[in-house]
Length: 193
Image (cartoon, rainbow, N blue to C red; front, side, top):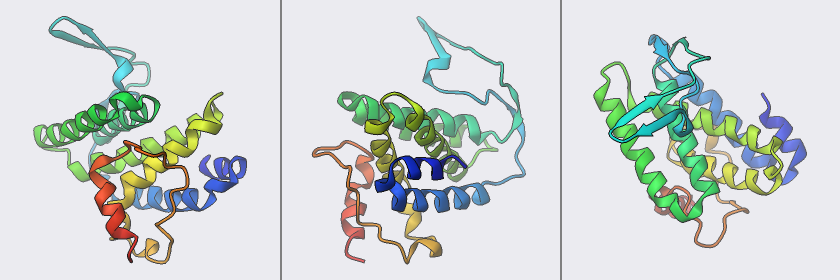
């Protein structure tokens, strides 16, 4: 529950943080809790070493039993956050995350794409908190909040709790912002509601 602390430190984000908190609750309640398998628990791109055609997964100190979508969602969440930090390659990172989500959920029978998407949203929310504590947090956190809002927008149309909220304000979007390019058209259509 560190997201409210972010809102206190950056009051302009309060409305966005409120929406994100509600979405996190929705995401956590929507994950199929009947799944349990061994997982890395800190799987992100920096945990993969590339050695020619071989990939090595490192840093198993948090390995435990849990939902299989946690690793996939964490990996995708870190890719999206990396896109915020590296706008010159943002489109490629978004495409890679989308392809990864599709392939991982179709390649593992116990893993649903919805669960991966929900775990991705929970990871992005956690990354908002981590970015706020970092030295560049004041400048980067609003962009990660914006990423989260763009990522969650398709769900917000179907969640009753969000029908009463103002979904039109994204005060931190930069001109030409590459965040969530697949959802930009949906955002433009959404503002007419």
